[in-house]
Length: 195
Length: 252
Image (tube, rainbow over all chains, first blue to last red; front, top):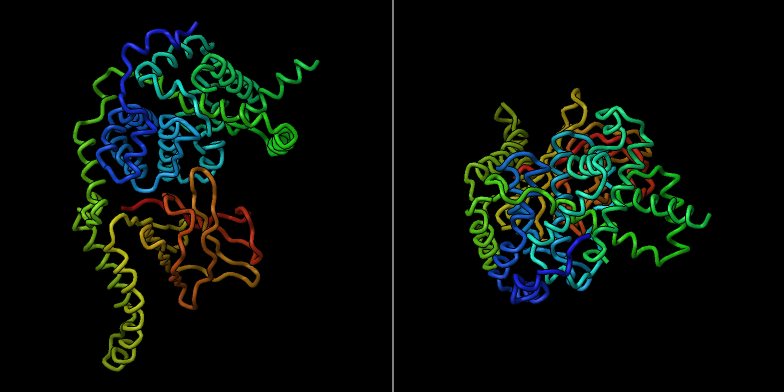
């Protein structure tokens, strides 16, 4: 079972909440961007690197994401956690770059919803990224390997169900069931973070 | 039975978030959501779950740590935009400035003839064109601007051009050449990809020389990094229905 509430208080990162840091950023204090980068820069970069596959592009996208957040952010702290917003935007922009490389319009079309989710979970403001990482990692370990593998192929590589079918040589129906079941299980395991 | 149905709906909602539903299933889910608006919370929870997935990526390898200069670059660029200085990273590349200005100038110069007579005649035309490019050049000098290169999706066609996005001016400039004429009742329509959705942003036909030069209001697509051009019926369409003939991506 996940120890979501256990132990995070002793190494709570921020004195300022994300809401306060964002308010500071909006008031024109660009150094607040440094605080946000210190909190989430590595997570954004890790996702960018996993999806784009090389350091230069990942660093470029990381800069792009934070500067876009600074210049013209549609983020609303009352509607969702900053971390989930940044991760969604990073994935969306990484997919855009991949689609340019592959010159395939379909890649963008099959992403599903790439809008940042409107959810406000109070715990997200209090737990450090490394603790969230630990929770998510532990949760994924509880999901059957065949479901986790397909979920990650769809998420990181933007692969369509039929492409996954070809790569793994399993029926389309099985691919869909495993991806969906994997997501549903992960959602239950992360209840404390996402509800 | 009810449990079984609930399980099926859970799977469909998961498929909805993952984007793997068939068009019939999408309709079914949307109707179900309309009848049960409280389920939107579950959609949100599934989306939040998906967005946390990358947090499981390894944290400790040297490669998964961005270089220290990234933080500094971000803050410097933010500071530069704060004081409206045109010193953002992308504009620090003087060779790109030269390329752009020379490119725009060359477009004007191509209208000049080889004889003096033609030169005189076409100079007037070129001056008119250049004056219209002055707006574009003025826009190019603003910070935060981005340029997308647009290319034909078909190898045999040579249509190409660029889209300059100037967020501060809430304006974009579309410039295309070698664009094929269309039959009556058809138009080209450009779509911007904004966070996975397609937003219609321009409708156009080329002039007799196959050129397009348009100034567009930006509205809600200032952040786009990808555009597509499709052939559509003249009547307005909410989504692309025709063939994609050109794609545009980030150049600067």
